Length: 394
Ligand code: NZQ
Ligand code: ZN
Image (cartoon, rainbow, N blue to C red; front, side, top):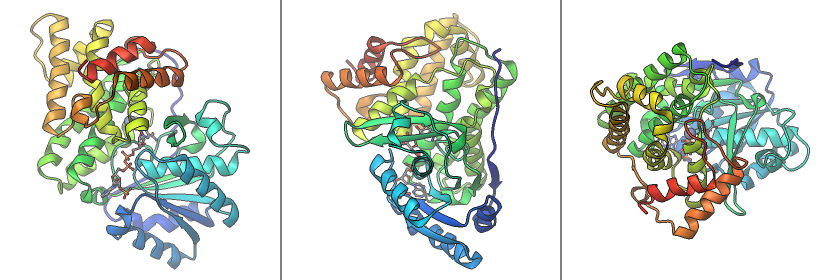
């Protein structure tokens, strides 16, 4: 095993009606002037935003509002938020919505505190020295941004999607009411479950430092999300299933399922970020469209882990060679994606990149990871192109 730091400072307030605590929590973390940041309107339609602003009014907390964070949130809105926060002397950002609003909130928080162009952080040109405190009211279980150190932003110019991570951006609190996720379309619920599983799978398929305790937590989490994703596919109003998935989303990306490992593989994510940047697809669906191809490309280099995954997560019986068992596990995962309505290749994702575009994605991805990346198997630009081609059916 490897040494590790485990830092999860986010106060989690979980359960029905917990959004009622929002004003109290903002005060607890020193917020006096708040930017309320949200997406494209689901929180208006559900009535949540109205309830939140009424609570802030009641508590005498002043605030300004900024909506418009889109899936694959844009840099231009981050710039707008930074200007607004500076002009209004905002000292706390409240994200009401999904990972996109939360990531955009973190980007704004960085931009207020750090001198210069905030994109330089996402472009790996400099490191953050701080971030405005961020709190989250979560409406979709997916990214884990409500506890994670990451923020993923897309720069419109060149359609470059990049993530930046630092502990400064870990939210101060996360209000998680599973009932708030019941208005999600089935597709978004499935995208969320896919992303949640993938955050643990990225950490699981490695060639270094794995610990039994971490594996047990990871496998339990994966089995739980798989089971409850299927329940939600047929019964979207099932509170307990919503709750299981929501909590799993946070635990899957707060570092817990990677303790002791070499940090994980992350190539499916890196490659999806190029797809998301270029075609604006939903992140979870993009991951599902790539994973099977990635897995078939790398599994021989990480065979014990793929076998363990097949047996302990996908319930494949122990008969056959290690390679056969590993492949059955990959097939079973793809079958699970089909059952919840997720794509298993780029065509099913609904986009049709040309050979030239596949090359552009591989090139941008290789630049984004500094040449090569991966733990299940190290991948360079050519390997990335091979996987994109497989996923595109070439
Ligand atoms: O924008 P609104 O109107 O709110 O609608 C959203 C959006 O259309 C809708 N939605 C959210 N909650 C809803 C709802 N609709 C009805 N009822 C509700 N309760 O769902 C759509 C997706 O929302 P979004 O916030 O975009 O989803 P998600 O949480 O999956 O975030 C995706 C973004 O996060 C990044 C992804 O790359 C993508 O840009 N990621 C962030 C990570 C992090 N910060 O740690 C890690 C991830 O790997 C990921 O890269
Ligand atoms: Zn993800």
